[in-house]
Length: 456
Image 1: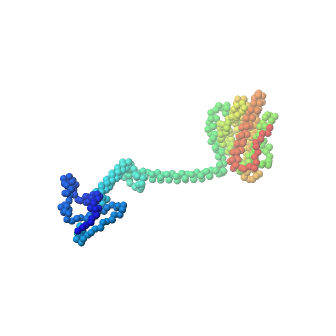
Image 2: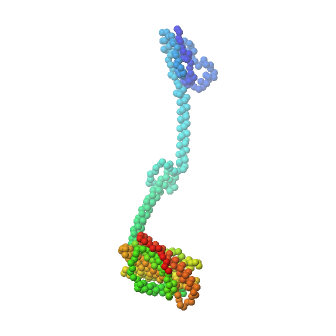
Image 3: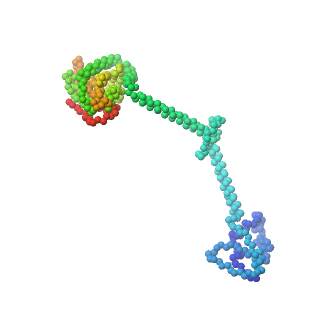
């Protein structure tokens, strides 16, 4: 009986051999002893060594680049029945499904889980030691009165801080509501105090308060100086009454154009000698009463002027005001310092309001005296009821005393140097005053404006 078997069928690959060895359930010791003390024949049973029943093992072969043609087999009837019994295939084991690889994977996974558990335990210990909460943990307020002032763990500390924050936010909201209410009250008071009816007489009260501290310094001076000052103020008060009578006799209603002007004129008088006159016109975009209040406040409120320092400002009587000041003016020969006293009184007529000012200035270095007489009028404008005009007239001259002998050089110095420097200072003051009055009256848009001129 001839049987043709392919040569490849009798070959067993290394991979199949390893899988077969893994499938054998033998202990490590017996397997080691068998490898050391036995021979290769000992690994097989007597039945396996007998060639009675040939075994046809078909082993999977790796694919070849070319298709292998299977050889023909000549089988008889007796061999076909024998092959059906002997050619039972064993279960093929691959290297990927072996128990050794599976145990290795399990041991590796177990080791990784142990390491991860160790890391988590380390983080837990660190959190307990630091006593703080992670950022993704949200707390709810817990009303626990048994908490100690110094919490023992991080959970109690977090709850305590959360409670303190709630109290702070509540206090902050309450303070904001109080602040808003206070701002509303302040706004209401400001609106009320801005009314003209409430401000009547306020300037007189403020002038008395500003002069309280200066009266103490005035009383501390020598009595002869104070007596002389009071005597000069008495003369200025009498001069104010005379100027007002003279003004009423000279005043005539003229057509007033709504234009701003500031003129300076130099004249000569037989008794007074050289005189400098200032005439200003300032339109106001407000009524006569409002313009009067603005001008009175401008004249009686303490302000810092360049080169002029006030020792005191006070009002001893209603509608009157006194000032004691030191003025420093620049001249070609240097800085000239003069001591001055001023008395002002307000007169209210039917169709206008008049401010009369008398001022006395003394030059200590030369023993020279200077006077200026001024009146200011507030009259309604012809352009409308809500407009008015402020006019100012001032005369500056050197006071002469027949009992005092003054040299011609001193007279020339007083009339040329001192009065020239004073005229420049007065002109700048009037221009700044006009700007302030117009700004407070609403910044009236004027059709035309004249440039200040000097007429000699």
